[in-house]
Image 1: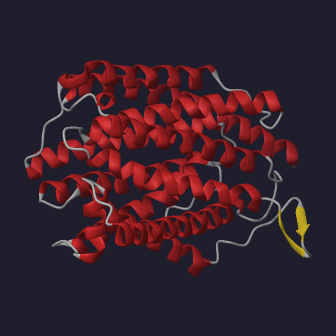
Image 2 (image 1 turned 180 degrees about the vertical axis):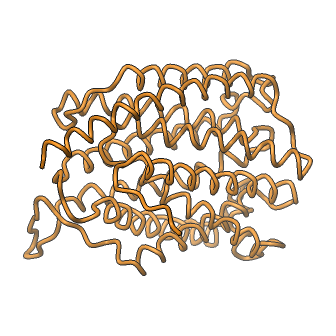
Length: 361
């Protein structure tokens, strides 16, 4: 029997976090498994990204998650459409940047899954707090950020700082000594900052008591936009490479992934769909009802950070990967402290929502 929960409840939050945790472990392990088996990082990027985006978009189209309840329709050249499309589609374009940069950061040899996850996730947690501050000042967000949420952000920053400052002693190279890593990381952060602002703008401007699941519509439209962007960019790059003979340590294996499919490409594509499943849980956690961007970002990112630790351990145990170093465990300790603070914050949010519900009756 399914565990039935209400939208915005703690039970629903736990369900989404559990799903996110499980499929992120699969994602983290599959990246390292196929790369350690001899598949090129760009090859894995192509196969996993292709399958994950097609899977998520296929589900969206099958379930018709593109029907949107607009709060302000607009008309342009005689065509009336939801004004929300003017920023949801750009959010999808930003997602198209986030998807490949995430896999690329995992794929760099010498950088563990745990290191990559801690740096990326910690940075996004900080962005969530900044977005709340901006939207509170703009009057878009009417909720306050609890002290426990701020403390959670603080310990998340400490966890990130421990990993970055430890450099080569963290079980992998210092990621900021590599120019390609810095460029990819910067692209990831800028795209995520824009996307998180848009998601929370959308969430905070919806009718409070709408009967329509607006989050599904946002995810559906964003997913269609991101998949379309990814495949257009891929087609243009392949055309340029074919016509110009452009080559390089990453562009050549990227093109070869299409013209000369690698051994086990089908298996890589199959396991890559786990990242497509992660997308559902990720967006629904980010846009979780009645929570601030700070809180939702903490839950989302800390869940994946813990999943990073689990994937590193499982890969070391069953596939002879590198075991976590002492600094990894120290970082995890700070992460768990942050989890403790958001657990307290969740109790407060639940009581707050229960009071709102009671006042409506």
